Length: 280
Image (cartoon, rainbow, N blue to C red; front, side, top):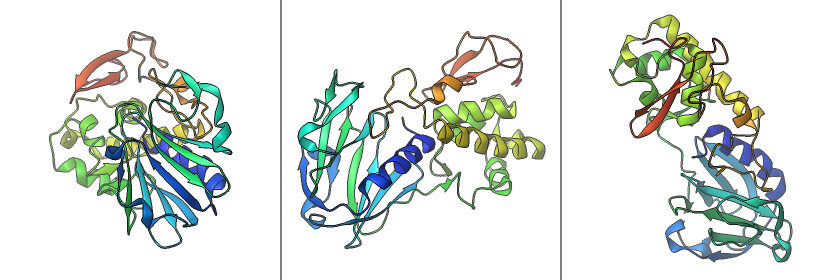
């Protein structure tokens, strides 16, 4: 699932490409993936593109918002010419480098013949038209509201394992399985550690580790992990998977102490950790 660094990477890549463009037509190939009346946004100019947690928001001149959530397998691709929408690399899940493909659910066509293709293999992702941007309930980890004091307040309230707390989007938004694993390794905290047992020093270190992991992910233009679901709007892959510390490295030596990385299940997701660096 694309997390904050991946969505931020898409935003930074997409914004200069579509800013000022006018939506000419919208082709909805899967009604499940598009919510709202498309006629409300036709002939409207794009005036801004922002990110809130894992949600990408396109602002339109008539004050409507086009909200994108990629969920597990969503992709946003941009083509300069809809009649020649061919990409340099094969697009994951499609077995082709041409759009539209078998996973394309929505096509947004602009007046200059460029276009956006919203792909989603599993159809969990969505595009929603709203009057206001859809802002997640949790605190965005790159916002000024995310702080050691906030993290301390959240952890003090529950015995929930810290890994699961970090992934609770109603509390903190933007962190998913990749960056929760990476941040906990950097902070030397075992993923099963009860949240309310963290010391003030550990909380401070975890706060800094979260920022470090997320910012490194952005610098590397996102993570295209084992399933390679995440791609940028030009079809290229992210690079952060080359720098994973523990995520998807089960059995491989810890980059710090050479101890084999272990994997356990938490909340239906895999947690990766070094049993020596991250003692429970």
